[in-house]
Length: 354
Image (tube, rainbow, N blue to C red; front, side, top):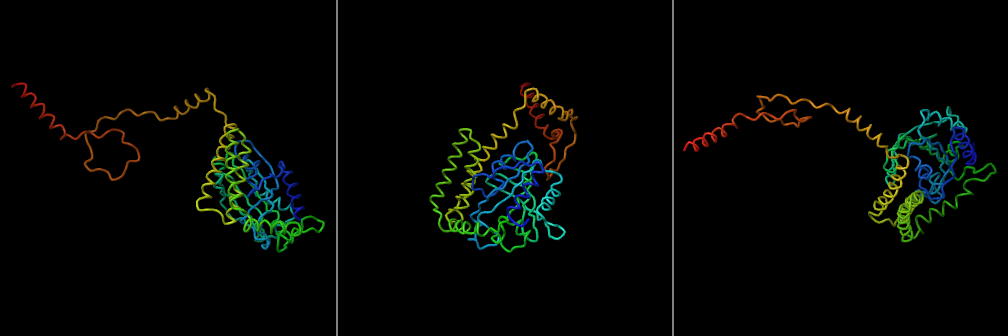
């Protein structure tokens, strides 16, 4: 494997052999392949899922005008979604590297722990950054929550950076020096000008008022989609805003507090979409099932203890610590408190004698 074309072909064939469905790329400016509707929305619900796709990823803040070796405003991710996560995941991953022609006995393979979060989508998880010879080529993520909902079963996402995989395999110094195909066409001839223009637009040219109006428009469109039951349209409109907010930040036009406000709006839309989808996957239990569950809960409750005999002793010093459990019985009334009542009864009797 010495080109992007061969890397893409090798990964596709390997994961197809693992029963993965090959999904088309989304026609959206996504900041991560995991945001693909067929990836993110499929994290929810109990249905098993095995899918793979190649997705162009747009990150305006990562643009370097084509001057960085592998930090790009646009790059390719080959993403694999496995639900539930297999027990032999690391073995499968090593086999996928073998399929790409890596002899792991002659490469430095390292796994660095990472925490993964997309606050605007209520998503978080953990996993590894995988490095080959010092270059991060894959990110492995166990997704524990999506749209604020705990995933069950837990899915795992593998995201291969195709350009970085080829750099690690061939040892070339820059992504622009790797081959695209086997015909001598290199990545630089195909993409260097595009990378320069994307960076120039993000940092110098983008109209901040126009970008801001797009964000407002897509958030409104997402809300209208929810009112009409168009869940995928609403989700796609929301994730478009993630890219536009990054573009506005790269241009230097993001006001204080704007990011937090827009992220809250995006999160609200995505959570509404997920809540509706979850209802379709988790129907209401029948009345008979509810009665059975209530009976099980009642049977699991501890039986009430009979009241204890009144105690004739009480502590004279208050405790400085709160008890772990409430006392089984109230403390007995102190004896001196009974004296005033006896005096009052004698007075009443004397009054009656008069």
